[in-house]
Image (cartoon, rainbow, N blue to C red; front, side):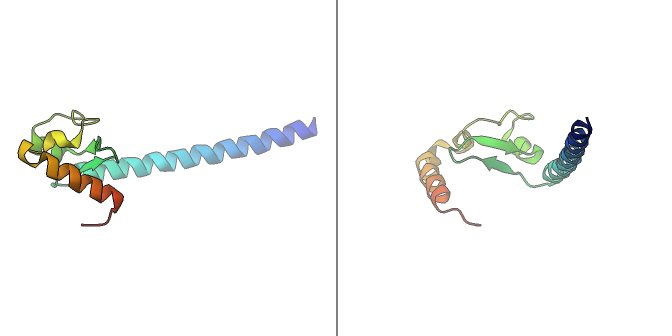
Amino acid sequence: MDLVKTENAILLAQLEAKAESLQASCVALALYENVLESTPDGIIVVDHEGKIEFSNLAAEEMFGYHKNELTNKDVSTLVPDSFQIEHSIHRKNFMANSSRR
């Protein structure tokens, strides 16, 4: 019986540590979202396939979209037709050799 109590105490301590870690992650995520949403600059995050994962309010207003309307759209929908091919090449080159620009 003592072994079960000890194991339960260990499991409870692990669970409490995970709960604290999750709470800290939630606080950090809220801070991150507040910073991104409060900036006056448009920010769009795109995955390696060109799908929009995140856009802040400034970007949505800039392109005339509502909250979360850009999520999962291809970023090329924001590029004028005359630049589609060039943009596709630039995006592929960036993904192959990403760097701060």
